[in-house]
Image (cartoon, rainbow, N blue to C red; front, top):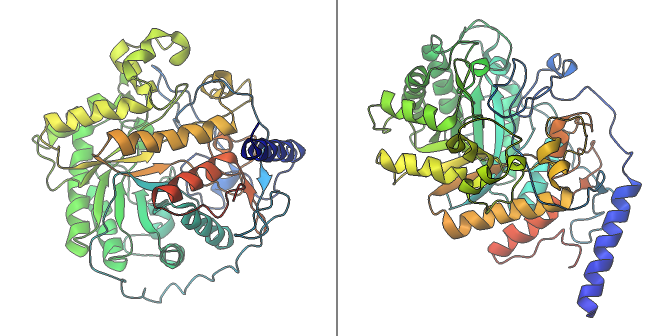
Length: 482
């Protein structure tokens, strides 16, 4: 064995031992975030919900569909504490948290934008969803880690009710001002998902609230011109629970999308408008529709021409129980790959990361070869709870934290080599610090949920840091072998 191989093996053994020793450690505090992509109000945080299975049956109300994972490897434990400094990683010692930034006063106008030039989107462009809303101190830490790791984009949910919940035109921009400011300080591009939370409020339900929604996003674009770089319009409208409990309505969504596009562009012509990503489901009924059918009907409602509706098509690209390179046609060859879902074989392709290629072909049929796809959610879970609905494509498929990290890197590599039509690729997640082992989101995260003043590593962020920095000719400052 060479000296370099011996050193690498020793490093991995120390990392694994540290993970085992820390397996019981967790942070105390408020109850976890209810759903994977939710920006909760404090009251909501006391009412966690259970996310659903993906398959021919739609998710039940209050749940949230998610991706999956695959390929054997032993299951690892929790997390490893952060390096003591950025230049001298030491898995045994936590890093100090930067001083929290106070939120600006609500009535203080934001500073002028740094530039009116459009952001250049690489192919692919590295992004991750983060949870910056309620915790300014962990937000600053996480943004610093993302910047150091090589991410260019951060995705954050701006829930409609959290800003305009008290009535039409009654805005509270205090938290969004702080988030926008912190992202700019770390020189990251900001992708904002704009949609309601799961609480009823004065604006009502879609599509009847399309005019109110357009006014809201237009005012947001005016306030943050040049500093919010992309807007995701709504989330998973192929599920009725995301559409006011009404039957899924691609034409209604297209109408809402067009109005939001016009309102944003009138105030910030350089902002990118991205469609919602669709929940990965194989269902075809009133309360859930598989993505290819939804996108097809959406294009038909647009008259086959997406100009004036969106700049990038948003999708979700779950990996489930398979490596990212897997051909979608291979999914149907083994029931373990699709959890015995009885749906037709063409719908089972959703259980592959490369199902994104099916959606790309649809775009090309409608003449959209010149527009990019934005992958708004993708990832793999290593959920090792035998009673979890995610176990079959997590630990049950051989996914552990190390395999998760490998698959995420390989997903980016596949896009780099084969998908010139992909723009932003936003993985899930930089974690909410309140998540625990009882939350399914905990097992999707690329780091361990960490309280203020501490940072707990997982293999995924180290592997991603090495890859993303390497692509740009830099070394990862968190690489334990440097």
